[in-house]
Length: 261
Image 1: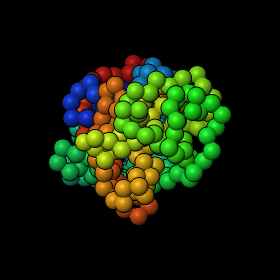
Image 2: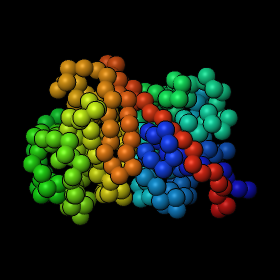
Image 3: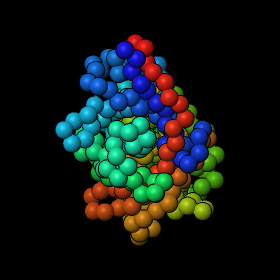
Image 4: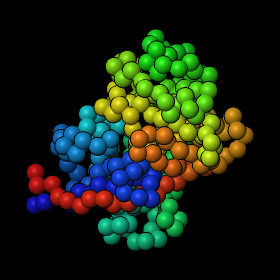
């Protein structure tokens, strides 16, 4: 029997921008090798697999090469798909059981707000090759449980980076967040994750679990409008509440299909 699958562009209000994710709502759990094979076939930053539970959905995320512990844009895409495809009523909360605990999402007009755990960084020394790989001197380097975070001197520097991905791929982290203050936005960022099979991720929701606390300390505020300056680009609303980060974004369905295997 054919298995429905859809593709959603997340953190954007228009097709072919933001970050694409595939979403597959399964009638029952499938084995890891099958899910990884589907993610490899879809060849997107993430493919999300959902299985209904008593009061929500189990949610797992796969890049083309690995399963990951937290993914913002594929969670946003999943919530959008559940409402769009009729798995949830319009006003019903989306509840996801994941490797990072319970995550929730609520609709607010055309926006979706997700509730994620904060993942603050601590100051860190630059690993050998990081500055060379980025090609720009850092103002600050930190690290959390997932990624390095590097603050640079300006938006122009962040936008013009042409990293050496062969070097970045060697670091034992999920990825490298690069950020600065922005013009027209509170801050901008980019996210490089060649070790996870993605040289540059278009819009990385989970990175804002680190970026929110990071910029709160520097801007002395708890709500932000941020922009991820990838080729596709995307806008993220960030709101801090205690040890939680509320991430807001829009999403649009661009493709409906079915898996035949």
